[in-house]
Length: 382
Image (tube, rainbow, N blue to C red; front, side, top):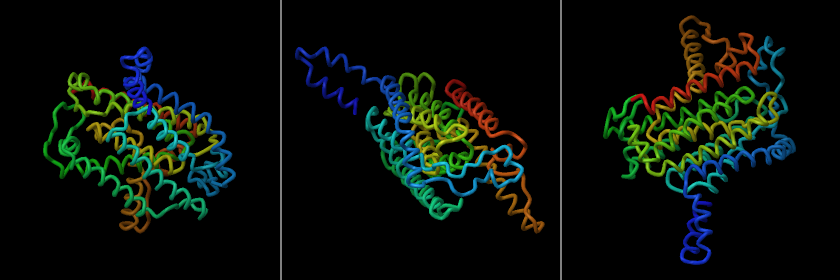
């Protein structure tokens, strides 16, 4: 909105005695200024709305009244505070602030619109899942196939939509890999569309699986979001993109504004979500945040870089897949399922080893920063 307001004021004031006003609002042309504004706005809104959101969720009895997985192991009870009764669905606030702030500060191009669409759809799916958990008083939530159908449907729609538009077709038809400056395949939509779907669905579910300890998922999302704030800015700037030999994505600079909104909202939410958490984001927030990272990676033609930047998310998701498939395999072969990890996702494995919750979260943050730096190195090492 501020971008369009600056255009309107400039048009009205040009050639009049109020022309000085046009020069004053000219700063809203710049992505960096609007990104900074978005980050501050989202942070302040989160800190302002947070206490009221907690009270509102408590009044609605939208609390976690089912047992957390970490509490199921008796040997963990001495180290894990009970999370029963803590308000969940805080992702409602997170998503509202991200979208509102992006609408205020970003230019509403196709890339921003697709990202906001993904966030809203996945937040709605997460809300349905959270509500199912609360009303059924079980940790199962919505049926797994329902979530996968919606996620795959959304991701496939985005992949096909990008492929059909001449301006964005290369995003799915040309295959880019990290640390290499040229496409390894061109005109390969048969591979690009599945990669697009995998990036969005995989990222959404990986962040969701990581959301099991206070502050873990949102803190890591802030770290990855900061990496993508840099990547989207560089991809949207033709001079920088050409200099660094990365694909130029016209309009991607506006995704920097969205990243900034996500950073501000995430930091504000972390204020209430750090240990011991006063509020959880629930699937409402985690599915939406993961989907947003996935779609942004696709829109700047760097879906495989997300695998590096979100290395901790990948580890968490991989631990669940390995545990599940190995358990089923050994049960069929030996008659009794065996485990690779003491508990999956991976953060619970380390709790079982004796780490405190705050230790796991802090050390995973450190890993997240290292993965983020490695992802940024792909800009230069080509």
